Amino acid sequence: MNGIYQLPEYYEIAFSFRDIPREVDALEEAARRFAEIPVKTFLEIGCGNSPHMDELTGRGYDFIGIDISDEMLTYSMEKAKKLGTHTRFLKANMVDFRIDRAVDFAFVMLGSLYVKNSEELVSHFDAVARTLRPGGLYLLDWCVRFDIQDFSEDSWEVEKNGVVVKASFASRVLDKVKQLYEDTECLEILEDGEVKKVEGTSVKRVIFPQEFSFFISARSDFEFLGWWNDWDLSAPLSGDGKINRPIILLRRT
View (spheres, rainbow, N blue to C red):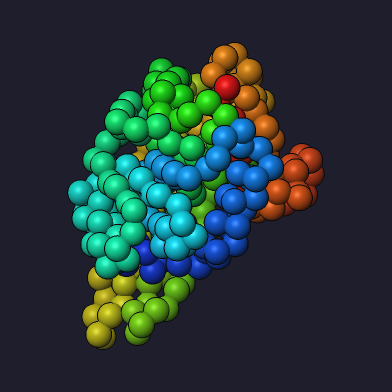
């Protein structure tokens, strides 16, 4: 994703279609219903441009973001400075990270669980476990693949402040045995009469639903609480109908 992540201001526009207040409402509802500790600090893993930071800190929470992109971290820190809120950012790999304070609620958005094999998956959950306080929650957005087709693609367009960003996404199988997919994201940017195009690719190991359930059940440090459709905690996944942006909730034991 190097090319995409080097242009955080356009990346932010491309993904601004999300209803951030609604998603933060869901985070708060999850905390009320399922957390066994008071939730005061949120950690976003792979925070990118930190789209939820403003809403979370505006509601009185502390926010910590980790990412491997210098450009995204700089962009997020500049936003946080303008807000004057309780935030912290660290450059770290989600596969194996350490921070010097425990958090109450961790989350990863838009399928951004970038692990390439089972060993990295285990290492990631080890890192989350040592960071998350017992009784705290871990929410994963679109990180388990419920659609098992070999290829998927999508495209959309967003205009903001006179800038038009046409975004496209495609995912294809690289290795069916290792469950490796290659994701390609492309941004076509129209600004001041000029067009520029940037593309980024990444490889990750796809995780399927029953595999994920078994993986969590084999661990002693997380409890599976459920999965729901489209950020709606009143819509548990049933296996039929269209599934869009499913969220999964775990609790640290």
